[in-house]
Length: 305
Image (tube, rainbow, N blue to C red; front, top):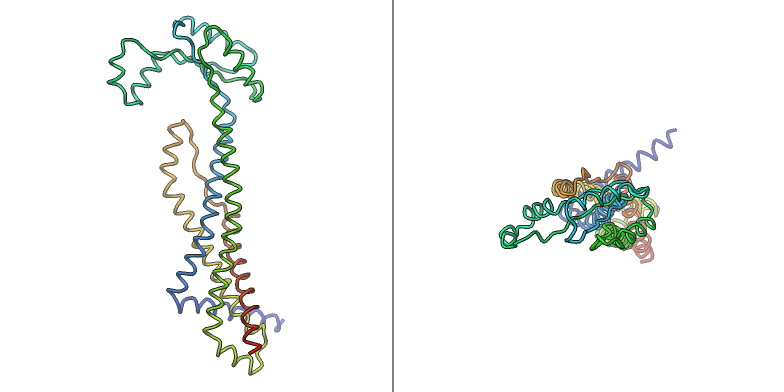
């Protein structure tokens, strides 16, 4: 029991010493931690945004509405009758008639072309039917759209979910690019910490030589540098998590306002507890790995001189 206590006490002292050395060089430590934080926060923040976009696009995916624009010759009563007939179909869940008068009023209110519209002698907009198919199979939706497009009253059918498919493809590409960036920036963190540890070893070269001369083991010499790399990586992960949280809080209100324009109550989702722990753990592991590589290479050189 005493041996375990001494072992833990020794490592605790080494960790405290490594943490203290970061405070003794505040400017250099701050620069190193900032670089590590940026390298960790960039892919993590992008991954959070991609995940939010994927969740939001998933909710849009279920809205397989499409719009049927009628010929200008179709009057109000004919448009209402056509809407009722289409809504009575088994493969249609709901049909919403957008009256040409209401459409013009909305366009006048939101387009900013009110004065130009006053010059027109008649309403240039047709009646439109927003059709929501029953079910949601993409093949059935396309077949229904083609069938309604063949009607004499139809001028144009616009499938409103095609852009969702494009968005999903773009998000999948973005996800893979973020994964690649995560790997590359993780390697960059290892290189940065390794270089920092190399400089620290060179600065303490005389001290290391004295320790080896009096019988200090390789593990004893290496341990402070390993904890130093661990501290740098952990501190970088903490700063990265805080940076992501602050960034999301800054854009949460504009994002919520944008969602409300589309009648959505969606709110941005930040890092979960598990994701935050993974970010901190990744920073610490990368810091430890960078220190292991640096000590294995440069301490050996001191030993052979």
